[in-house]
Image (cartoon, rainbow, N blue to C red; front, side, top):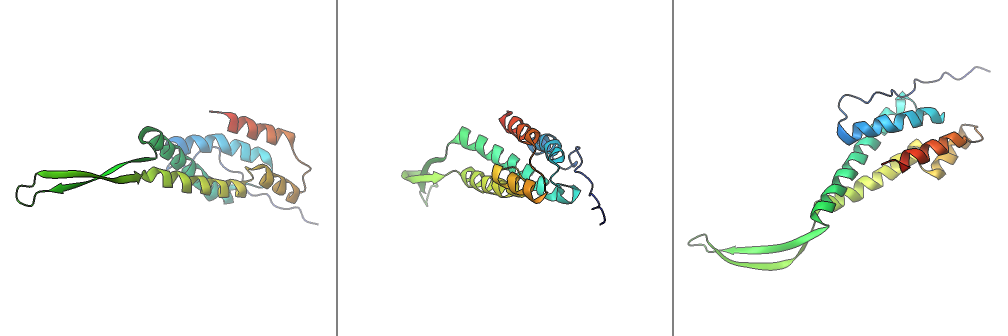
Length: 150
């Protein structure tokens, strides 16, 4: 039998183009992923990048929704064709904040990407079993500490 060649671990240093929250997420999550011994390698860096970017999108969208609400009143303004002055402003209902859609789609993508990386209990168990490992209590503790962190 030949031993499997191990691929390079993920670099703990975030790519230069990741900024802000995405960069912080890379720095926080990569050490946990590398410690898991679930074969998350440099080949998976694009998945980790997408996870970090979507995490930043989710956080920014949430901040927008927190500041501006999920919806706002919408009005139709009628102008005079002669003078251009406002003749009437009529309430026409509510308009959805576009950030709610960004929040929704980023959250969905995070769930999908997290499953691929073993960041949910079910996917982590599946990856541990497929790796032939009986489980590592330290990995669960590391992930709990990571996600409990603000």
